[in-house]
Structure formats: C-alpha cells, structure tokens
Image (tube, rainbow, N blue to C red):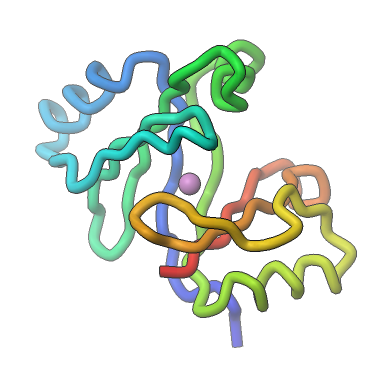
Length: 134
Ligand code: CO
C-alpha cells in the first residue's frame, strides 16, 4: 500500500504573487483559500483549492530564500510536488531506507499547521518532493 495518500499541492514559483493570483481567478475562477508567509523558508504562499488538493503559488520574501535562487536559475514554473502522507516521519524514513537523499533530516512544521519534510530532487528523478502530514 502506498505511503502517498493524495497530492497535497503542486507548488509553482512566481515572481509576482498578486499577478499569479489574479491570473488563476480571472482565467479559471479559482479563489485563494489560504495565504501565509513562512518566514523560516523566506516565502509567501497562496493556496487555491482544486478538489482535495491545492495549487500553491509561491514567491520569495527575501533574496536569501531558496525560491529566489530557484527563480534566478530556472525562472518561473513548477517548484515542487507535495504528497500527503499519514505519517511524515515514517515516509521520510522510507526514503532514507531506500538510500534516497533528503533535505530535511527530521519532519518540521509547514504552513497550515502541517508537518513536512523535503526529499532532494537528486535521487528523486529531478523533482523536489515534499511530504505533508495534516
Ligand atoms: Co509545498
């Protein structure tokens, strides 16, 4: 049985969060359900619900943010895919047991009161993966 129970969100790095929010509302009628500045990550996010999942529009709040570096290097676009899991620590351990590279050695607080951990894209076929426990 899969440890991944749902796609929690697809995160898209953008330079102008307001413009991106306007685009999703004007074009698709999608409304922001949650906004949050995550100071520890140097990002501001806007979450738009799509069925049981979210699109997460993500923009850096400072030049030292990893998302700032990402935008400089890769430009706007998909930044990471987040999978919902029942137990973040268990899923993270499964990655380690499989020899995968992790960014977070331990689960940590995410936005919306979630518990999260990131898996390094090197060893995950080029995609930054986030494990999200609600
Ligand atoms: Co995320």
